[in-house]
Image (cartoon, rainbow, N blue to C red; front, side, top):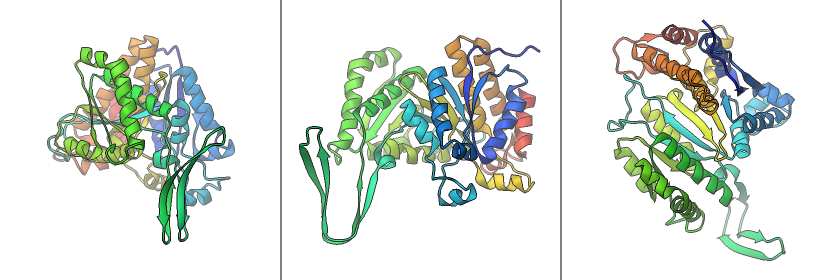
Length: 398
């Protein structure tokens, strides 16, 4: 059988721990037999990030700008324990955060719907896609412990030296304070990414903040979204038969729980972080969640929505059997290959991505699955497969 040819490479970002093991299995069993796979490879494993002073992460992001499509394995964001474990030079930042900042992208996360894995929220019939603004807020905050009585102020010093001050709080005793920021151009990129993705996927778009309480910070988000929608997207949405809907975050949460799903829910950074985990857990598992970073400049980076599965990796190192769910990582590859095919006009590659996803879903719906899914499925007597066995079962269907 002749292999499917690629004209433009994908940017391939390898990762850490158990997901790195799955990454190789997926390539060996599901991709390389069928595709003449062209990738520009970057090792984002923690050891190599440490060796290169994290330059490899920046290089991978710049390559994504060059080629337009990337696929990324899950990576470790180090904490104090990892500093010791990997003998790190410093506590390197989250690779995802670095890549998001360079690509100026919005993260879209959606559950993978499979018969037999039913949502906890009984009226959810269609996937809910979370669009998370990936810049600023608490993730780029500055914090301080206030030791005792005194004033905490926000001070803006303009380039000409003039100052504007706002009192945060007049402390009478110890406490804590935090300063957050965002950028108009980042919010604009977030809005455009959301509107474009809604048009791409023909889904309604919801957006929510707390503008009634945060009359400047959150209100700016609301205003920018509305201005861009009215100026550039209102007519396109009407033509596509989809709607843009704004409400307060607490109202949005209440509405989401009673909805059928089938829309994009745009969230500020923290809200998106929290709500994507809620949605993925309620739909079944973080391992059944797609994640794509979309830049308004037309760059796409596909990854799994979960971490490196550390506990399974330690079992794997001891030679013990693991049953790790590889679905989200497989869908990262299929998403990237489909987008590469779409941009290159390569229908064979797009069709292969569809078949890979169909084979994966069919395997689970036939009752063959990893342990995490077997624990939550409504199917009777599922066959529990180990990490490698599950990928081999998909390969048979493929």
